[in-house]
Image 1: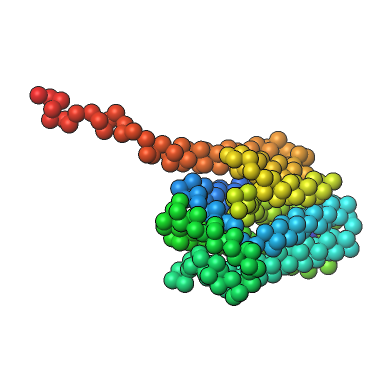
Image 2 (image 1 turned 30 degrees about the vertical axis):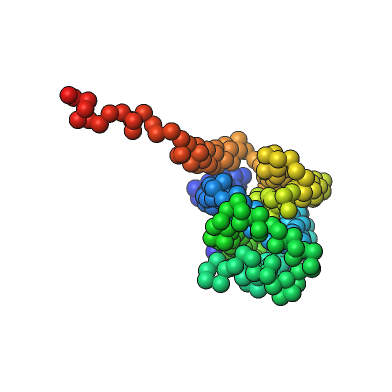
Length: 245
Length: 97
């Protein structure tokens, strides 16, 4: 196990050692960008092929929950950046505090995601046999829709069916991508939460200061990357067709 | 500061989503998202203060992403065009008669 601030044989200076770690982390993040890039590509191609179904599907997501999650995640990026700053300025107590803050906000994000997924289950929007894009427009009460919202949804689906007779199948494609992309993103958050927990334990022992803070910095880079993925997911999945509703 | 800018960006993107800019809705949404991502990379991730070698890696990553997106979408967007010349060329048997 790695001791704090120790210089390894293959490096000439601590600075060079740290620079190497940062570079390595960025190489990892770059492959993550391409990894998620493939999914964004799949989304783009399919959305282009079935714009109506993707629009109808997107408008069925909860803007309130999605928007709240965006705010929570950006706030967690701020606390993470503050944790890195506290580490580089040797404010040991603040490091732990900000890391705990980041972990709490990350868990809030995941909790909201659980609520959202549960709602999709209730609304028959999970791809598979039970999938029915018009379930909520037929059972407004079961979905908790107001009469006005239900009427909007009925109209939207009727118009959608005119433009795309295979609306149900193509909306299913949208929800497959929705669960694939947000699911992979959530998985990254779970991994990040595990890493944060480890960091908090280390920070509690006073491991990180101005001389040694590479783990805080690199896990910070990872956390910010996950935030960036959500910055793109939010408009693409939740917002893209609101102006037509 | 950066945090506030990111929050304003989020507000703007939600607002813009409800306006009808026709084709430009997607351009605006992705434009705002890209500005936010750039802010995160430059300041939260210290991209601005990193060495030139690290900057090169970051730029390369996006360059490769652009290749993947660009070439694939070019292919998809040209799939349903007119049959290409090689397909409309006479069958080989006729060529040599």
